[in-house]
Image 1 (cartoon, rainbow over the protein chains, first blue to last red):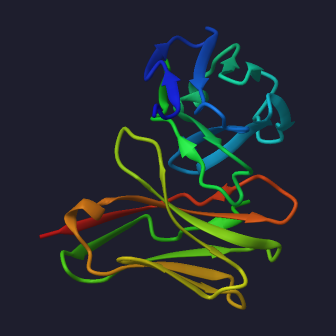
Image 2 (cartoon, rainbow over the protein chains, first blue to last red; image 1 turned 60 degrees about the vertical axis):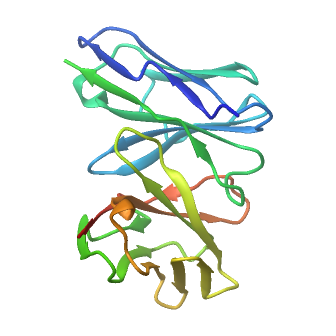
Length: 115
Length: 112
């Protein structure tokens, strides 16, 4: 079975540009999570969805970040405008039930570099 | 404000010996804890978990210990193997939430 699929794997762009990260969760999973990994803060939860509905976006750093899940098989994380401090690895994860008691399955991440 | 802390950024252990990775948490409402393992250029993968009603959970070479009074948990790997070299993340969650709070990770290197 295919795991969580993220695209692109790498993104390099200039400051001020719009960046869109994409995620396809595992089929049948009810929950989808977006994380950001940095050396200083480890894995931070940005936002998560349950049945395509955003449940908690308190981790989204500021209004420049937005996320959508138009259907059960696709989600996007958008940064507009991008800044150098947004450079990080962004992970998408999905789980069958709540990520609390069920392991979350992670994609391989998008390494984002903002110049 | 880190609610889950992994104070050792790295650990180096000889093959065959025990690896002990530590994790501390500050939120007394946490009642479920997990360890994830991450190889370079890959996403984290679930390793082992423990509920607060237990103080130990074992799965093959991996054992997680929970000390609720100290708000501390540890992951023991015995015996350590070179393939265990990875970054290990501790995570925690509380009741009435679907969120996991992750630590900053500990890089384990197992050398021959």
